[in-house]
Image (tube, rainbow, N blue to C red; front, top):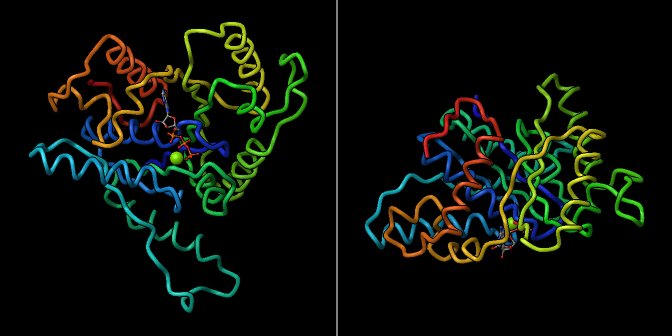
Length: 269
Ligand SMILES: Nc1ncnc2c1ncn2[C@@H]1O[C@H](COP(=O)(O)OP(=O)(O)OP(=O)(O)O)[C@@H](O)[C@H]1O
Ligand SMILES: [Mg+2]
């Protein structure tokens, strides 16, 4: 059985597609077979990222391990059972097709609440939620008091994950391993950073997720997209840019992969 990794957060721009690309490519480079689905049917950032990669590799004659991207299959409306949702069918068909030949299936979700995203969350063995270092973004996980110290209540996204967990429990599936990953952390704003750390830890205990080290704010993450590359590919492509910041970023990715603790994954990069 393939292990399903879902990358989700209802907040736009949290870093889902960036984290998805890096995790999927890291696993492919470690020799695992990785199938990728992009549920952001409008923006298709991850699909675009991977097609940029295919184009760049073909053009430069390189053969680097890559995840394989798959569109959701179309379904004939007439083939749906009464009351069956077309999106549910398309997603389950896509997963069923990938499952026999994948070690991992990685699903990137849109930055909004959609039916597809909701169903995908209930399929997650591992759920990765990138979170920007801001209380504005944290507000979708939980509401906090005016001091930013105490949690007053869980919020929409946590409730959605809670529902997904209930569904899995009812179906007798193993619980979701939910990992919240802080993204785009800056060197400044220490007070905010520490406050965020404290409420995240409080919320983790209260609603049941763990935290993993994420990425600092780094220009390189915005520059790799047109060539479809990740931090791990730079050395193989002769692309200039292995400066200290990029070496540190590679280490952040390594730490993230380690913390995800995925089945059968041994760090070798
Ligand atoms: N660690 C980082 N350092 C610098 N820029 C980053 C970092 N992570 C992501 N970005 C940039 O932030 C923007 C949003 O990232 P990304 O598209 O991965 O987020 P997303 O959660 O997938 O967004 P959406 O909700 O729209 O799908 C992009 O321009 C991306 O290049
Ligand atoms: Mg995205």
